[in-house]
Image (cartoon, rainbow, N blue to C red; front, side):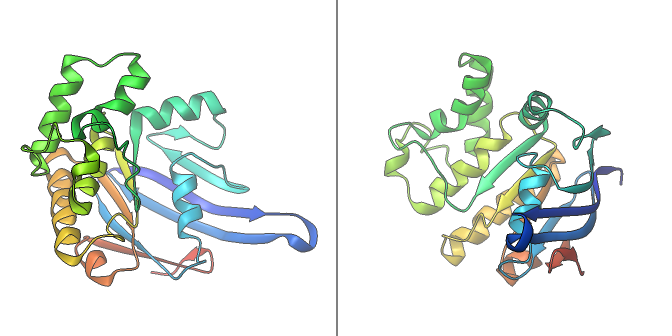
Length: 225
């Protein structure tokens, strides 16, 4: 498979002098197009920092970060914002839905903000995604009236609106019961298979990690497995 992104010798340091903390210590990683990988490691290992850098929300202190042939370390903030909007999606542990918006409005809203308006094509894509998530009867429900598992499925659908190349998921099943968590993972696997979207899923749950075809272990700021 073709490489989607490559990071090499990533270093990330916070603070200066005696307060300096080095979180990433020369980490290198390649993700290929269409991979579905789990990111594992104890708290404080550097997983969240790595996801933040891969999502172009923060630059490393040193090292290289190339995705789709673009040098993201050299890019300025405006270029990073454009790149992120076009190519990267995010799913978080907390769904962060707007409670007064319907499921469909929550899915379409970020795209509408970027485009300056809500288009029929965007609504059609949103309905398609929610139907694939098993929410065809909940499309027009206010998100406040959805169950926890349903809300998280909406949160998975939302970043897929623009067909990103990469979705970064930070503990996406952490607040769900086992049945709901497995349903969400089934849906992620379906999108990965059918649309070729690359997923990197940070998790502490070994069962969730086992559902991914690759497990990447971070410890003390480097990849150990």
